[in-house]
Length: 311
Image (cartoon, rainbow, N blue to C red; front, side, top):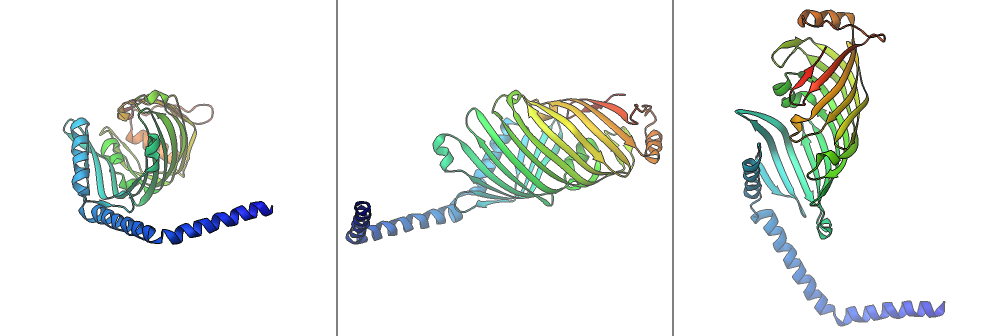
C-alpha cells in the first residue's frame, strides 16, 4: 500500500515540476489558442455569409425538387450551429404552390464528433404555429434515425390543412415519433409514435369543393402509430367529442413522394342525432347504415394527396 501511495505522490511531483519548467511554453500556447478562438468567433459571428450560403442551398434544392425555401434571416449559433428566422417551405405542383411548413425560428446544431465515425447528426429546435418542436436526426450514406417531439401546435395556424383539404379546424396538437430506416428505401422504415389532439373543433368546411361538413366538436383525438417495413399501422385510434365518437383502423403504405402514399383505412363513427340529421341534409348521398354496435362504417382509400371515401 505504501508503495502505491509513494508512486502516486511521485507522479504528482513530476507533473508539478513539468508545469513549473514549461510554464512559459504553456502560457504562450494558451495565448495562441485564445487568439485562434477569437478569430474563430469573429469569423463565424460577423464575417461568414450565412444567409447567402443557405440561399445557395435553397436554390440547389429548388432546381432538383419541387420544394422552395425562403427565410428572413440566417446567423450563427455558438459554438457551432445555425439560427434561421421566418422560414417557409413551399411545394409547387403544376402552377399551384402549397405551404408545407412555416416556422418563426429554427436552431440547427450539428454533431461535430459524430462526423469522425461517418454519421451526420443534427439537433433541431423550432418555434412554429405557436408551439415548439425538437428533432434529433442522424444519417450516413445508407441509414438514418429520427426522433421528433412537437408540443402545443395550433392546428388552425397550419394553412395546408385548409388549402389542400378544405378543413377549417381549431385545436392543439402534441406528437412523438421515432423512426429508423434506410436512406433510399422507404419500405425498410420502422418506428412508432403517438399523435394527440385536444379541443378539436371543425368549423363549416367545404371538402374538395364538393360537399360541406357542419360545425362539429371532435373533442380529443388519440392516435398510436406503428411503422414496420414502410407500412404505417393505425391501431386503437379513437376520438371522443360532444358531437361524435369515432375509431380509425387500417394502414398507410408509404411511397415517395409522401402524397402518393396509399390509404387502406376504415373509419367507424357514431354521430349525435342532431349531427346525423345535419350530415344527411348537407350531404344528400349520405345513405350509410349503422352496424350492430351503432357505428357508421366508411372505408378510406386513395392516397394522402387525394383520399377517397367509399360507402
